[in-house]
Length: 419
Image (cartoon, one colour):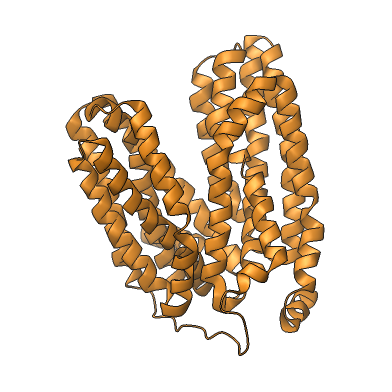
């Protein structure tokens, strides 16, 4: 009986992770990689400032230079994945990241950090585009549904890695930080090895008389890329803007900052698959994007209102606001899967995902300056303007989805009409 129950539970976990062997392989690879990311991200800045002894300004400058250069690796990396195969390109990128991450333990200067971090970010940009193309191949007829499942396990991996990082932070020794960095390097290597278990998907040939770079002429896709990059301001709202707001403008206790991260991560883990599995078509994606904007329209004023409530109410209001905001995040990411994959032709998924990643990363690069100067500078008014911006961006979703459907090749439009 016990064996039967255990087998049943394992079977349910397997189905949650994917409907096929390749899906479960990619989930396992991504999970392992994101555990490593969680280990590293939570402690990297402290390692370079407290252990290596670099000034915070130099660390920030090095990472900014690396990030900007890495932005431009996604498009050529994605095109290479379309022409040579997503799996080998992604495996090569992971191998480079494993080596560059391990090399960070040898860094003792700003110049060395800049070089190593730049190599890492170039590989990350190219690998990210190849990863998007690989998700489409592995997901088969329902890539958006598979991507929602994948994001659930990715979020869980980050959470577990962050918990592990907390133990190292508590130890606060050079050895503990080095273990975190090498653990992240090992996660890249393990991810690459696991990808060997995937089939060798054949390269899809482009239709005759088609542009080599169709994405540059795809106005609906470029419009959605810009739209999603702007809506991406919502991510640093929880990770950057709200903690500053809580500490400087509310009476909420400091533990609220930790609690809001837990609520955000846990909610995304629990709800991503359930909501994302219902959002597949371009039409679904447009409606989901609008829903996300409306949820952000509610959550941002709630966060602002916390500055004008007693301490007991401020903590509850902030946590409730994060709950609503997290729900909006799930709807927004589900819309991105449906529209980002659905608008891209199969033979050019790599270059499309490269452009999509470039737009999102550019938005994330600008977000800290916008949120900390405009929104914080205007106080509650800034929060309200941010809420209206999100709602306005979301409102464009349905019409953009219809525009995209009209401009796809006829078979895709027919399939959309019958979906």
